[in-house]
Length: 315
Image 1 (cartoon, rainbow, N blue to C red):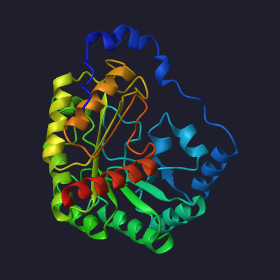
Image 2 (cartoon, rainbow, N blue to C red; image 1 turned 90 degrees about the vertical axis):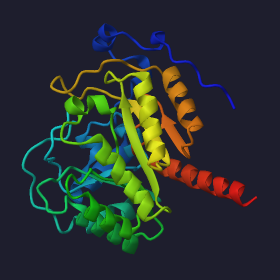
Image 3 (cartoon, rainbow, N blue to C red; image 1 turned 120 degrees about the vertical axis):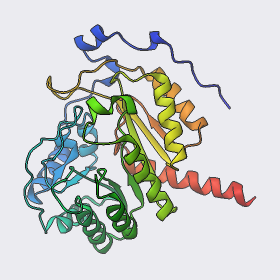
Image 4 (tube, rainbow, N blue to C red; image 1 turned 30 degrees about the vertical axis):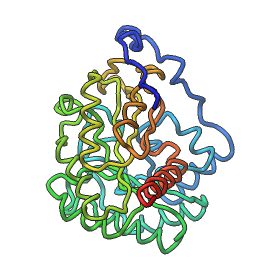
């Protein structure tokens, strides 16, 4: 096994440099082209929001050009105000009963082999929006039965047990819920959430149905320490999480949390090596990695990794 690359302070830019400009390794091309425009038009026609737009994802040009979009259900307005997130906050509108069918129509028209469905936080709803996730999964199974389904849910604060049981019973292929950052930074970065509640959510998914892949992600560059990231990895593995994603935090607007460090590609490689050594089935770590970036390809690799692991057990 290759030794993990060391992580040194010199691998990180200084805070003053970080505020001056983005480093070359996280610069992306502006979205353009016919396929991009067609994806955008489809989302408008079906009245669907996407996390690609709402969260100002840097990969939107690449993904939409390939006609890959991460659908955001339950509207475009969140009941929380996390310091890292660009999704607008306020009083959401009523849940659209046609939304599940529109998601299925989008998957069919785009010819998706794999779809990622996420949502805003809906603390105003009795079930946190869990029933809408179930309806979307059911609509996709009817309309595009060959499409594999990945969901990225909120934490269903104070509603988690019933919400998780309902969604797990609908059997998505991948259940993703992001821890986002290290426990120490939760009060300022993710104040409406609780670190260990998010861990328990993912642990419950794996306990209820071990066949469902579980996935979680963290952002770096918010001021976390290297050993804190290692501890998060250990916590994830204790909860049975299969797939870890790591990416660079980028400040959406001056009102959001500042970037403390721009983490170099070399440091991401070191983190990935450590994560693989800790036993994750799959690790995606790079400056531009996001939860749903290359999700279809990653799902194929995730499934292959499990099959290889099972083959070793049966030998």
